[in-house]
Image (cartoon, rainbow, N blue to C red; front, side, top):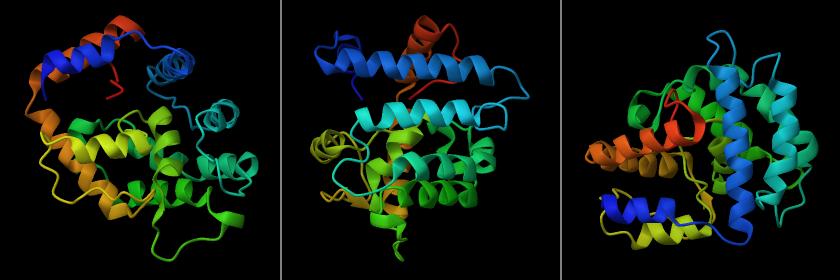
Length: 217
């Protein structure tokens, strides 16, 4: 990862809808940090889960998370978010830097629960190859350690020769759990080889959110 290129991408002022997207993300993340800096609280616990659901039901459709599929996300998203509360509590202290240490059972439950939301009429797919954005866009907000894996992300991953990707990212919008884990692990390894990127992300987090308690990689 080239630090100059990385910084230029991050610090280039957004335009158009990008301004709104960044504002929504930063506001959500600032709220998350304000909740989770208290050791006994997190955004999916019994005291905060309803507020989290309301925020995500409002935000995620604007981010085109459920576009193109007849699904009842207004009902299913709150159910899924509630279902993954305990699993989220187990993974929320792990960053992308610790991805290989995350409890498999918790991560798999999150994958299945969030992926199911965008399935037509809520029908589970036996091989769990869900729409990748249905999992990763909400997870990008509540956990902050994954890309959205929208079409732009997927194209750029395939073009980026600096990544030693061990499995070719599928062009399809449906991914398996193992494909996503493989790519996330590759991102972890690339990030660990670039301490200057880590330092920069932490400094940006302190600048924007006043803390590097959790860094939204």
